[in-house]
Image 1 (spheres, one colour):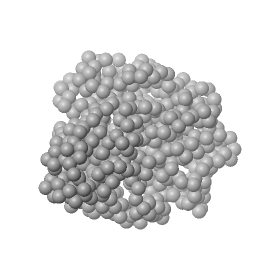
Image 2: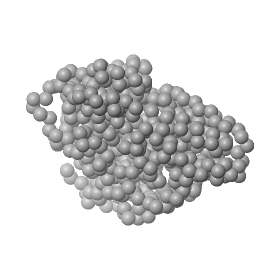
Image 3: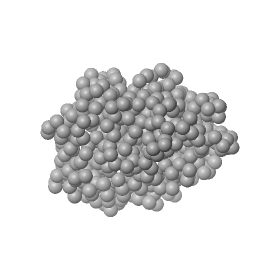
Image 4: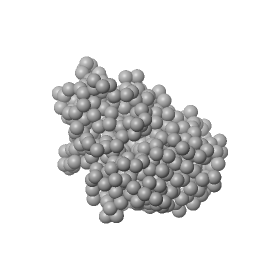
Length: 530
């Protein structure tokens, strides 16, 4: 692949930034090791039924940060660039890219002959329409690409113009978690409204067929899919739909999910209840795998109410027993990690900092009571909101509520399904504290709680300055210095209180071959040998 020295530096920076996934998965799955070539004897065809706990609101990644939307939608949509298992940036819809010497221009040479699911050939016009919409409306685009835009050079060339050199640009373009920069046909982008696109048409190995609300999303193999020729590695290289039909069946009830898996009604359970792992492990027809799922956080309403006061937010961090909440959320220490860093435990090789460590997991409810009084708490009811569709969020919220009561705080816990929760959390009149599991990000400035427009509504001039310094850092060493400053701000401003890091458990029938995980389960190159 042709690229300038600057582009190569981006690849090296991204690898250094992430170092994600090392040692996080079980030996059975080896989710972040290089995928093997598909065996010629592998059965092709049939269907794969995935029991999935949460129904997304939309599959339009430009308008949502939901991991459910990303896990399902990235089978339909693709991006200009992606990542391999070592988190190196690799081509996908772009064949190559070149960075200008001043760092302000990136020229992408697009693949030829790639067709959308509606039969139309992808051109630079589609890429530019998609990317400019993503920059304008997505949180990731607005945060990292302010003042940037794409333009068409010719049918197979798109140019990204940056306002200034941006160290995080290529890593964000390659990220396939929530809010990823999906490429769609220009005519579909042109008819989209604030809620999202009207049709889900991408270039991926699977195409959208049907969405039965509260039942399933049905994807089907796209016969005209143009795969890359490189060996599959993580999210990069060859992608192939080895099953004809892929169903995401919504099963928020844990007992239904497990019973269906044991009865062979489902082939995959994407997020198994921790209480049911032992039962599934005893079944010789089922395989169990563990992967990092995210950070369990307490989000404060900083627009209205008690927690507009930083001291009140700090008080909650002072009073909680983080490990007890994590036990409640994850049931066993092999499924969680205590970690004072903003980033996840497996990222500490790069993003390590001792700042704030003494303020994490203090478990001092008496001091918290005093701080809450000083912050103006007068016994009013504090509303905690979460979703039952994610077991760790719900159980963590129950354990957290009990600890707040010990701090002398009157509480009310409200629990919703995931679509209702994601809608309700946007209203500052509906909650005081949200219990949320945030998915991992490749670098700290992408964390959701740093955004002004994300529920919780962080608005900090000090943070604004730090983010400019971090994203504009000329090299990794200087970025690491700013990370210490970000950690200091994290504990002083307290946009959220981090409880800890969690792992998720997935289960598959032994007939399912080559299942992998990288920022979510990967369903291409997966066969079902039934």
